[in-house]
Image 1 (cartoon, rainbow, N blue to C red):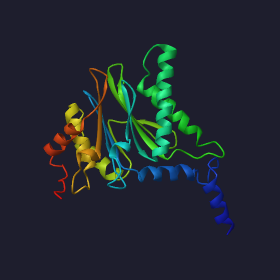
Image 2 (image 1 turned 90 degrees about the vertical axis):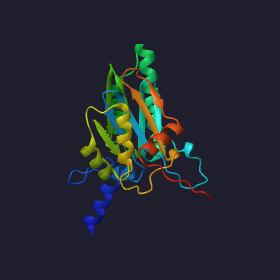
Image 3 (image 1 turned 120 degrees about the vertical axis):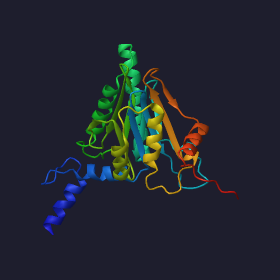
Image 4 (image 1 turned 135 degrees about the vertical axis):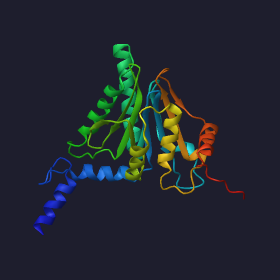
Length: 248
């Protein structure tokens, strides 16, 4: 009984390590990420691709209100998976940091610098009493000094750089597909197709066009761009992943 009480103490206390060196609340935050719909990031020589699955809880919900991709600055975008409200808070942190850097130094913020500023903020919530970790993971993609960069943030506050990465639900299967199919010489269009195909792992019926959000940051222009609905529909049709509509 005493051991059970000790276990519960470690469970509740975000600032307390368990005897085996674990922070249970951080691990629970990672579980919250797994419950979110998936997002995929692909880095190619031509730029970075961010693709997110947009699920609605009801046919009456406007899918555009489900925000999964966010423009941070002209050259940086973020995709999220996990607790949506937590994601919005971190998006605001990232946007403020980008604007502060522009005003203070007269130049755009680096993708790595931005990611580490966000993860520093996340990490503070793993050692502050009376607070909880952010239950969200982010993919930060952009162009820095003419080079595409892609980072993942973890609820522990740790940044990782990737060539291709999936976060959210069904991560293991999607990541396995990316590891098999990724090619370092992919075109930007090839990166979009690979991300869609990876998200389709386990999806027998494909996607409706409004069920995906796709953004790119091209290396040459360094500009963040969101694909229109008809462009997404054309890509899904080309890949034979377009969900057939109901005739009634």
